[in-house]
Amino acid sequence: MKCALVTGGSRGIGKAICLKMAAMGYYVLVNYKSNVVEAENTLAQIKQAGGNGELLAFNVADREQIKEVVQGWINNNESADIEVLVNNAGIRDDSFMVWLKDEQWDSVIKTSLDSFFYVTRLVLEEMMLNRFGRIINVVSLSGIKGLPGQTNYSAAKSGVIGATKALAQEVGRSGITVNAVAPGFIKTDMTDGLDEKELRRNIPVNRFGLPEEVAHAVGFLASKEASYITGEVLSINGGLYT
Ligand code: NAP
Image 1 (tube, rainbow, N blue to C red):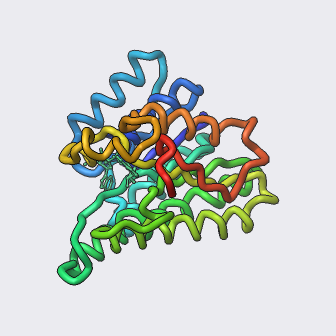
Image 2 (cartoon, rainbow, N blue to C red):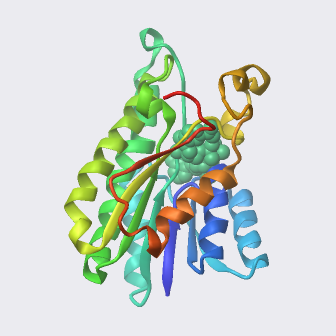
């Protein structure tokens, strides 16, 4: 059984990636933190489209939960291979740095940067043994150029970009590629409160992107045909200057 693990698969970009992975023939492990209704909805849509998968609830900001749930799943499913890992779960909690609280710094760093390390390390060994794997990290424009009010988020995403490039060099010989996609403004719950009419004036294609447009790029990077692309950061931002 060939599997794709997608963190934060219950909503937004992660949900679209789950559907894309299912369409590519993967058994999809749909991770979520607390929104079981939306996670079940993602799984139902996977099944409606003729795919299959299961839910895997864990908080990516909690390394003990990651070890327990992900390692537990691997131990209980010895015949299954996690071929694709998409580190997508992320949160933002914006504030100018002068007012940024310890908890805001910690939660955003843990959710994006620490989770990259704790989840990826668990699936790497099997990928190395199989001499094939695809790791795709969902970062952000904010991690490339830095955005005011997002020192925590920019630092987390920038950290993942550095780790993507380093890990790509460690595991290239094992047939594993490690890439990142960096969305700009995508229509999800995360950008729900933003003023698209105002912000789109700076975006050359003049609109926010759709989760499916990010999922398409992730699908490409996950494909066998993308085997000579690694350590890359692909911007998906409608031409927004980075
Ligand atoms: P979203 O609509 O807010 O969905 C977030 C998803 O992540 C949900 O499935 C949520 O699960 C899950 N999640 C959050 N914290 C988690 C945790 N601690 N453990 C496990 N799952 C967790 O977000 P989105 O816009 O799709 O963003 C997805 C990724 O793209 C994030 O990494 C984000 O930083 C990045 N990104 C988004 C944009 C954008 O414009 N939307 C731009 C650049 C980058 P629950 O449903 O259980 O809460």
